[in-house]
Length: 212
Image (cartoon, rainbow, N blue to C red):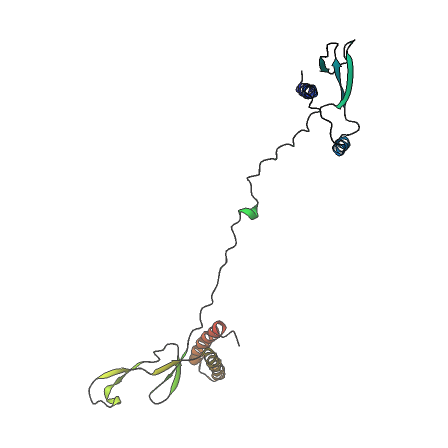
């Protein structure tokens, strides 16, 4: 016997056993109507026969009763196989897309270097000049120039102050304009020196004075 037929036979045997035990209780009116509506009109059916012998013995069968037995027939929906379960979902692919394999974007913070400072230095006779160092232009002078009558000397350092960046840029532009004026009347040797200084000033303005 095939599996499906064996399953139908088992279900039918269970139905017959329930009817024999008196478990086939009628449904309430609204329940019966709902059950009737839920059964398709073309559903396969089976007839169950309730046979009562002369001695009052009751038997249930799926074939007509024997001759001489009182017979009651009841039509029921034939048991059918449950719908086949859906096929199992394929296992998740272990492969990943290029975007998933790619590392998260890295945030790089780029800080521009601070502008190079410039200092204004003042000599003892109140002459001013600019310097890239807070040391200015230290120089060795004899002590007698400072009022000390001794045969010795000492280092003299001028007082220097850092200039604001706006002032530094203004001084650089002024110096470049001065170089351009002097360039046409300068000797060849001086022109070479002025060209080198002008290139340095242009590079510094481009790096530190881009904002107005």
